[in-house]
Length: 224
Image (cartoon, rainbow, N blue to C red):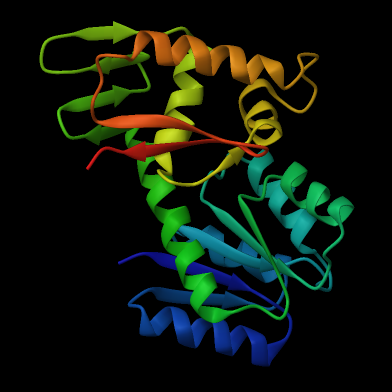
């Protein structure tokens, strides 16, 4: 059973989120602000945290940044009334993994929680298995029944990212920010170059295909 911490100063919203999570079988702990959340984290293992931004004492951005600085790597879903790109940038820069704007759809929230937990498991295992293929992060290798292919680090990270969430479209900018970093001097064409190299090296792989989504970016699609 996964432990989820809900950090929200609005009692009604906190109870509603907790209710839906419990119905899905999650164990839920709650806190009314960042300070209470830190106390919960001191005494419980938390697999995922859902937090508001605007809270008394310690807000969601400060809480997230403090946790990341302290080495906490569980997924964090931020839920807030703020919806400008600047607000989202602040959230992601602090270490948030996903972002929802109020009023939130509870079914969508459950889907996002499930996806974040799945990605966290992949990141923890550092391994993706698909048909007769295994992608191992520590060795930067892709292994099939008859071949072991070692990839350059950036190419591997790009492939691992796409395969960690099959069918999800990643924009070139998202891939640049996550793999090359927000301060990277390269432009988005760097992603295209690395995708081209991957395709050339993976022509013998039948488990998946890297698909170009015109005007948006790329996605990985599992073969039927």
